Image (cartoon, rainbow, N blue to C red):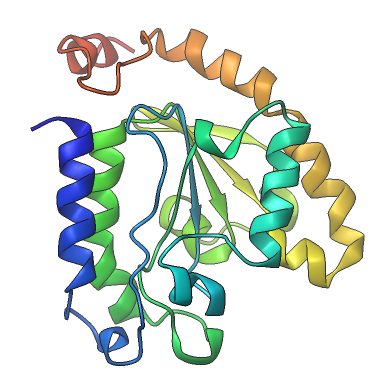
Length: 210
């Protein structure tokens, strides 16, 4: 099964998922979107009102700001994959509960395996906690660290920067570093860019050498 087929299968499963109580209040699930061969994968926290209405991630005010940040970094939204740690909107945009995070984690891990990104960028404390438990965003944001076969960068959630104007320069600076950090990740991982249809079969063997 190709990466695209795997992602489509996961999206289909998510649309009818009843693993946690969030399915009771969802209008549309939000599996995530982007190319199957994305080098950069953004993981936010959970869908909001507009995402629940459209079934797409980051389409509200925070999404518009994310698009601006990507443009400043010389990237387009269509260049990257964007999703969340939970696929359905928590009622009232409350924080996701542990059982909700656990229920969605299998989907997210399968998406990560299919896409095999060089960099995962966490947006918000719940996605950051998946890779950097106990870390403080104020001291770790913008710093790239290796986690297994890829790199992870914690960044402030765009919504936080909209609500706290003082954070805006920091998140803009972090995004501006992305092209340089991607080049560093490419060099360190020494992977070829996979096609959308398939991933190089030699990757796991190569990665085991580092």
